[in-house]
Image (cartoon, rainbow, N blue to C red; front, top):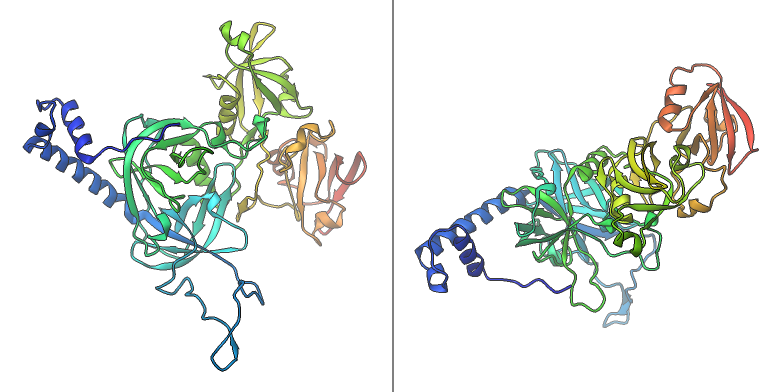
Length: 497
């Protein structure tokens, strides 16, 4: 990948003036004449207006490691001139005007009442977060919701009357459009004043670097490995992760991310997570503190062979179907070729995984399939994708009598493809049981799989909640396998335990 060339403002303006058909001759002298100056002034005014509209929504984020009792931070105690050993002076804290964080990033205000959008990879365990606004006001921030698969997180601060950014539509972007990056590079924005750089959209639907030695496309850690990212030649230095990529109207079309440079190259290209329908869904979910859920099919897909592609075939071949998953229950078979999802043609495994990732759990997906050269359609009620990484959910799903359930596929261990065949059977899996509550006293434990509520079969959390919603007395839960208990048994959960 060649590094994008940088052009001067005058070169770009001259080109814009020529394209506009203003009659300016193709020469540097013409471009620098009155008409060229007017074009430069017009572009300058557009840029400054776009920055002014958006930069009041940009904040600086300082990440500070939490202190532990007795921790000395590796500082050596030195003697004073009288031989007394004293500790060195403490470094300025986050509330000190002279404080410059070692770890820093950028955030974008998305709600007047203190919600800040940033990148998930900005977060670290055992850390505190401080947000500085453009007005140079400092706030302690907490994590409202975080989703590793989208690489998005939402922080919250106790503030009101903030200026939320205006979202644009990244789906309308085209290569060559001018964009502006606003962020906090190298902590120079710790006073809340965002820095700006500008460039063009270099490319679209770019892929994040893959996980080394990971040959299974279904095990990717983020959706961006399948090709979602905006590539730009706007300068994105360290600390700009979580900033805004805006168009000339000052609308945010992407969340900037700093990715590691490719080995053998000087620096990585600039990338941004697109603000489109998929990520608006994620952002809206995180704003509420809820868990982001993604559709799960249950196949191991492989790309077509070179010979099949040369023969004009298109799609993705089903190498195997995991027993008990939606693909198995709704009749997908080994060697089926999936040619489209929801009417969108599929060209490879990345395209298939990306389309599935756009859909939430418990949604119905329509697949166009070739089976033995014969076309057919298969509709599948998707389960829940097992997201790897630590999620932050501050508003969990409601519990019932002290227990919570989830899809049987909703496990973080990506070795589920080789799990016992009965693990993914019909039912829901118990994920959490509060000690002392009726479910716990009735013997329900995490890992158990519930296939029936009284006489009603259940296979999704929604069905489970509907089945127990009006129950006031004892309820019989049929257990079918799991990490504890016999292969088939019944537990009766009474209101009082």
